[in-house]
Image (cartoon, rainbow, N blue to C red; front, side):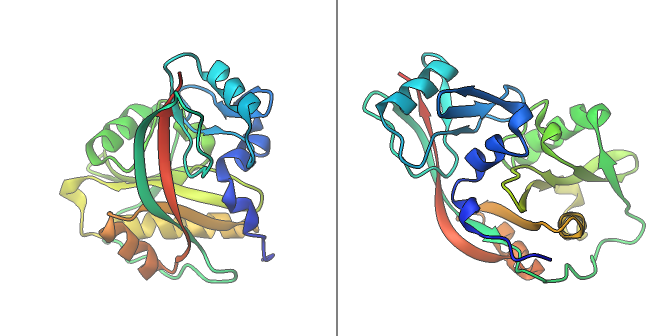
Length: 234
């Protein structure tokens, strides 16, 4: 597997919107964001000036939510802060093997599609792994585990900067925890991603110590600290 440059991970939203997810992008000048109901993430250049911030404001509309993800640039005065959340960006080491999943016997990983969206929305609403919308599944492959027909665990692919795929929406229903489902799903995604000569990466909130421990146990390493930030346009 090629040793892909990690610099592209400094702007994972912008790189995704310019590349693999260009068909899901809306643009105005050098500002961009995802199509509504796919994701709320927006992107500006690394050195945004007044014109880029004005373009993003026009693209989103007055009083709209601007989810800048891990973009470090600070919007001009008049942009109202909505949230700031400290976290980590983690990457899969080049050449590492995902190993064998330790899931409960009898559970089977299945690929999820548009017909599963209502259950995916219900599961993410109950477990809150991060933003998930009616068309988020269009970003990549989503895998799930069912018990007695009900979707109890899922994980999928989100941002796609060149050479990388982000693993996201890792969640398990409270009644199904402790059975290895999250590990099994993440390992299955790592196997898929590395098979196409890409490397997995992910983001985790600093306060989510259980998830951080899980990802470290699976083999992910911290690349950098990040702060997720959202604003409201003037």
